[in-house]
Length: 375
Ligand SMILES: Cc1cc2nc3c(=O)[nH]c(=O)nc-3n(C[C@H](O)[C@H](O)[C@H](O)COP(=O)(O)OP(=O)(O)OC[C@H]3O[C@@H](n4cnc5c(N)ncnc54)[C@H](O)[C@@H]3O)c2cc1C
Image 1: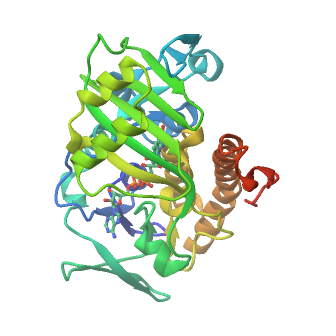
Image 2: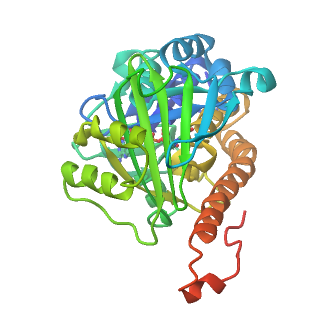
Image 3: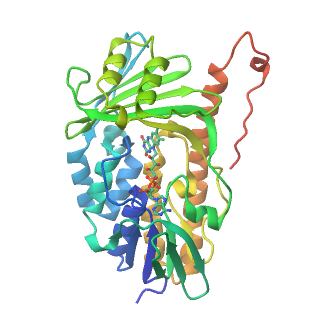
């Protein structure tokens, strides 16, 4: 019998919730995942899995890594181009040689499917939107919008950027807008647009445009632009014409990639962060992934640090003498490291905005560079 927790409720079937459920079940803990979506549909965009995240998945269950490597794309090179399409340089990927793991790009949905396939189907409860929870010294009860409840020894909020669990536990409001909007989409892979193992990065004055393969016949683009106010399109067609407008004077590749994208597939997202917390765990409730440490994508670490959380939380629950020690050890192992990564990623975003916002006609150009994020 586990002294830490026998039964665990996890909110969210994203990369964090699912990887944690796999890791906990391997420790003999009866972990159940509750997800608000009605089904696991093809949603989200592409993301990059880096050596630190891949190593944690490997430690959780080695066969996950092989499946991911076969399904996603192992990047070999990155080409940097100007907005008019001239190549500045091509860098060979060094992650394998330096860190023993490649960089794998994959569709968020495929990652979700692969992780879900390592769990018994009856432990993933779809159409369960968490709305509240109550804890006492013996257990924690989670309430769902559909009227159902779940009782467990521990509740893990892995419910992403707008976490309901975090709101109830910490109550620190909405994520903070960092001054850039992003548009992302997955489309069918076309070799005439992109070599199979290469990522293309184009940098304009206040904008970026990335294109990379995701494996299994899919590719992805990410556009990011410095915009002082977050603003949203009202229809998919409006989103697509907005991206066309924002990237109007960019090269033919960018125009083609946007043109062949189904407007319904374009995700329009503000780049946000949350400030690092001093404590994630209170009583029988803790946080994990974006819910605990939402960070901007500049260092590509959102999902990777989430897998670090999953591995460490399972280690703590599997090896500590009691729940209180397990959760305080988890906080100790994770908060400082993720706060450093959050702060550095946010500084990179702030720095780029300060750099590119310089305008000789505006008084704000005289504002000095200020470091506003503290660990
Ligand atoms: C432009 C952009 C590019 C990115 N690129 C990268 C990258 O290259 N590499 C990288 O590592 N990361 C990247 N990220 C970040 C990455 O997408 C997230 O960090 C990662 O998906 C976090 O996983 P998670 O499981 O914590 O949360 P999520 O992926 O957000 O999953 C949360 C799950 O919880 C469910 N949920 C939410 N609320 C409730 C509720 N009340 N009840 C029940 N279920 C609920 C959601 O439906 C979802 O399934 C990027 C992000 C952006 C915006």
